Every structure is written in structure tokens, then in C-alpha cells.
Image 1 (spheres, rainbow, N blue to C red):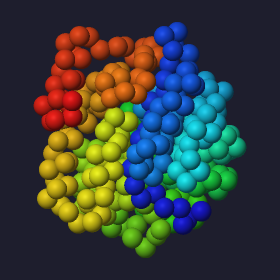
Image 2 (image 1 turned 180 degrees about the vertical axis):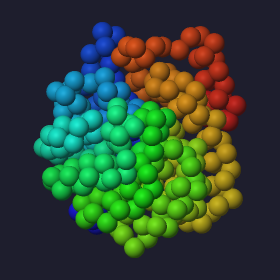
Image 3 (image 1 turned 90 degrees about the vertical axis):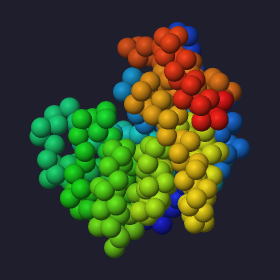
Length: 298
């Protein structure tokens, strides 16, 4: 499993819902087919952007099966399988593998965050990676969990033969640089968790990115990946600058309802979120549009 190359861009797919808030598998398949024309390394399902906490276990499996069927074999499918308990995470990871996931993306358990010491997290991930039939990618997303996966835990876990890498969405570039530096002896791949610090991550040796913005600006993000890899830093910098405001708009500022609205403008199916995530107000939609149009994307 260690040889699996995560180098490239992965969109963390939004889960399409019908107006009645049921998962719309037809629309999901349609979006996946449209992403086929973009040189992504693969797709992520059931990440934070996939409204993962709002999906029933059966829906999670059906989402993975649906996307795997619609996805060319040479594209990787990463699936979120993190649950609060180690036992539930192992069970979900086994189910994801069976449904066709190539890699399990495992978010930090966080409900009892005060008890989530480095030692507790190392034990959790070690047990999951030991039991998993597919490689595991660690996932740190402090904006949603209220906690970082401690650097020392990452460095320890990087030594596990079934742990491929980490998606780090915190945006602390010093931490990312140190993480890459301290895991150089291992076959460990660091993925930037957002498009706002993608160039900076590449400059420090990151392998790729799992970026919400790739759902709508996939081709430019793949271009940024290529420019950085070929050392065209001036062009890469100009492109990165134009991605910062759109990225902030579909993440911190307006979140998944914002992302789904922009998907409609770019010809994908966005649709509603499940409640309690609420649609944007008309002034918010205007601000969202401005973030894209002022940077030349609309």
C-alpha cells in the first residue's frame, strides 16, 4: 500500500440532495462524469464538504458505491470513514473498502476533545490502520473539530506501514513545513486541505491538495499543481493570488451552502444542503459572486 501516489488535486465532493433532502445519486453521478474531463488524481467522498455527519451509514456506503461505479479505474477514490469511537471507525473503514474506496480518510475523533491526547490519538489511528484493508490518510480539520492532530502524533503515525499521509486543513504553514521535514525518512505524503495555502504547501514539499474549491475551479487548481511541480513559480504565484478570495468564500465565509451555490454557476448540480445548514441570503449570494467575478472567474 505504501507505493500509492497521492500527488495531485482531489475535490472533496459535495453530496447532492433533492429538494426533499434525499441523496440524489443521479446528480452525484452526473457531477462525477463532468469531473472526468479534469486531470484530478482522484476524488474524495464523505469529507467535511460531503455533509458526512448528516448522512446515515447506509447512505454513506451508497455514495461510495455510486462514485466508484462512475469513476475511471485509474482515478483514486478516498472516502471519509472517521467516527468517534475506534470500533465504529474500524467498522466504517471496512465497509468503505468493501464499497470500493481505495483509501480511507480518517478525521480526528473530537467529541471528547479534552481527552484526545497525543497518546490516545496514536492508539486510535494505529488500531484503525492495523485493521484496515486499505491505506489510511490522517485528517486534521481544526475549523470543524476544534482540535489539531498534534505534530508529535503525526510523526509517530507516519512510521506505520498502512498510513499513507495526512490531509491538513489548518493552514498553519510552519506546521506543514515541519511535518514534511520530520517525516522525510518515511514514505509519508502531506496534502494541503485548502486552496488558499496550496502554493505555499508545494513550496515546502507537499504532494497535493484536497480542496473544496476544486469542486468548481478544478482545472485552475490542477494547473497550479503542474506549475509548482515544473518550477514556474511566477505564474503559479499569480494564479494562487486569484484563488484566495474565491477559496475563502466557499470555505470559512459561506461554507457548503456557498460552495453548492457556486457549483450551479459553473454548470454542476449543487442543490440544497440538509438542515440545519441554511441557504444563503440574497446579499450573501451577491458577496459570493463578487469573490469570483473580481478575480476573473465569472
